[in-house]
Length: 119
Image (cartoon, rainbow, N blue to C red):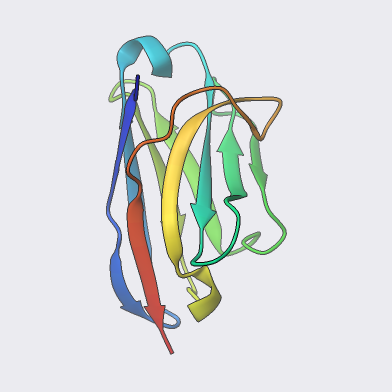
């Protein structure tokens, strides 16, 4: 059963910014770390970023470090991904999910949100 809904994707020019949101059920959000993942056409889904349950620890893939910021609002059961300095290679469908051990997914996948970066 899918416990989260992603939103905020869109079309943006290279160098631009987007903020993705992931609304999760309270039951899910209050118990687990959360992660963002992405899947580009013809490629496997890959880890992007993760945040601990308390929000005090964050982890990033090398490809997005320094450009993306993950955060969470526990009062709103929502996790965010602020994406700056976007590149065409960031084009993908972005998904959030519950994780353990940084990038080990334990939930079901939602529909994701499409991010397209034009050059």
